[in-house]
Every structure is written in structure tokens, then in C-alpha cells.
Length: 107
Image 1 (cartoon, one colour):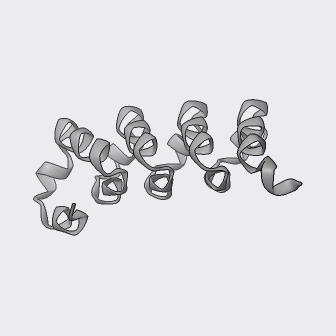
Image 2 (cartoon, one colour):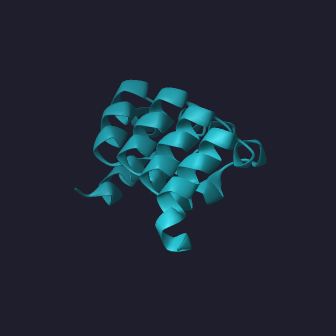
């Protein structure tokens, strides 16, 4: 996969919901080339995060405030907890998932 080639795609393609959804399902980091509008689209961000938690870096603040999105990331890797909004950092379910992922390191 060559995610760099997508940066040269026409802006119209990067604003196309279906094209971007298909792309982020294969490589979540392609979210970085999405329009701001689609970086704020729940379906696209969730698909990207399900593919790799690291795509949270490119998700909008609104999506980082979404429990479902953050839970998907934290269940993959506790380090995604750092991308959580303050509200989600206080969310019991997300804290528990992060501790479960990190707990082995606490011993």
C-alpha cells in the first residue's frame, strides 16, 4: 500500500464519502488526507480507528469526544487514551478499557 499516492488525489475524491470510507478501511492513516468535514464524519473516523488507533491523530476534536470512537481506539492500544477529550478521559468505560490494556505494565 502506498498512502502517499493519495495525497495527490483530486480534492473532489478526498471529499467523496464512499471513496474515503473504502480507503480508510484498508489504511486508517489515509484519514490524514480527508477533508476537515470527513475527518469529522463518525462513520469514516470509526472505520479508520478500527483499522488503526493511530488515525485518531487526524480525527476532529468532536470525534475524539465520541465514546464509541475512543473506545475503539483504546481497545486496540491504551496509548490512544492520550487522544481522548477531557470528557472521555473521565469516562469510566474508556478508563477501564485503557487500564485493561495497560494493566500488565502496572505490575
